[in-house]
Length: 74
Image (cartoon, rainbow, N blue to C red; front, side):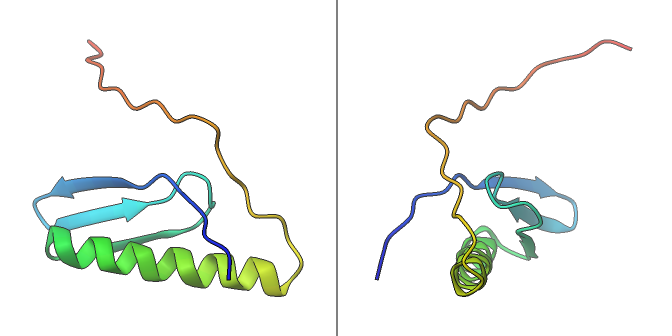
């Protein structure tokens, strides 16, 4: 069994939480609580990686992730 490290972005809005993994296109989920969305994204990543491995696909790994917030005037 191999271990992989992925970035996870979690956003909160009025409906709950949304999480996605930037390295794995299409790997995202939602939850009502922070704890729920963390568990959901962990499951989603596990299934996504498992599927890629079964299909002989490469598992993308990022060397570095930078997250920032910026204000844009329009």
